[in-house]
Length: 197
Image (cartoon, rainbow, N blue to C red; front, top):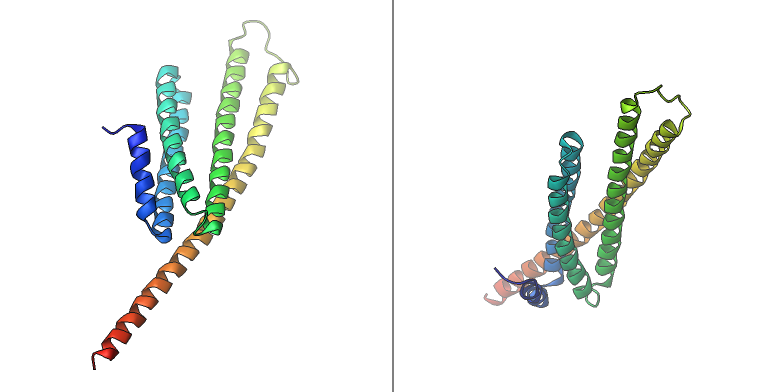
């Protein structure tokens, strides 16, 4: 198994030899992987919410964080390698990366808030003495957390919308580049064909 430094050098070499459109295609592949891993993070929390197995949840979080970090490093390499040949693509990838980071942090915050709500509800139900009334600190805390989750959901959807918009723009550019290359090859082929007569 190759070391992280070896893998990084191999990836740098690949980028050195790749055309800008190939780098962009590689970015789309990494972006899909990132989406899949992010979904695993949400699934891990749902499982934890049911079984409360903190050790297993921590293992999954560590694994997912390492995978996201590795993908992020490769995406930064692509971003940097496009900075001179295609600066607009590089800037767009940077914006997507920042939005993905914000989206991930929001997901983490939501998980903390949901855990806070569950813990508060558990404390309320476990009290032997009189039940706290609406307006008590437990209920207030739950209401504050729920309000924040709703606000986060709006932000989260805005992040997704922005990410998708940037991805669509890049896909359009990639398709335009591909069409340009193909039409150039067709014209070259026609010219070669004409010269043979």
